[in-house]
Amino acid sequence: MERTQTDPNLTRSLDQIEGAATSPLPKTPIGQRCVALRATPLGALSAGDLGALIGQRMSLDLIVPRALDLLAKHPLVAGDDYPGDLLGTVLRLDGSFWLAHPRWHARLVAIADGVGAGPEEISFELAEFPRQLTA
Image 1 (cartoon, rainbow, N blue to C red):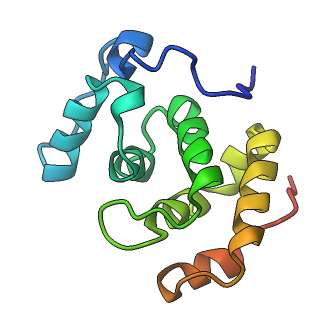
Image 2 (image 1 turned 120 degrees about the horizontal axis):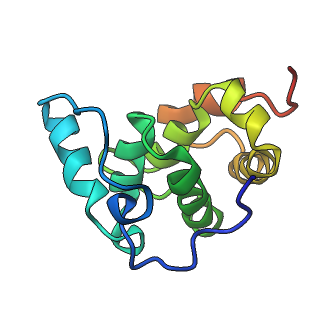
């Protein structure tokens, strides 16, 4: 079932909600960061943290709604790199994810359309993001 709102209990971590990750994460800096983030309460995750988890395609059903909530308020919020990088990361999720979550897709379309061409760093993602879902 598609979630339409962020988990109301933002004091819980991904590990508490889903259980500990079953597959080992790579021993790279981003992998180790994501291990630590899985133990962090959802409400304490920053834009950069959300971007890191989304970039690694981790717990998308829990993280994307949180990112969309943040982007609705601050579309060009800077994560770890530059203004709009969280939006760019979300825009890069593949079409199959959005087909499974059409309401979230509609929210993202509204957010993306609201920023227009956006900053140069994400102009490609903004231009290429499909506004219509097709199977």
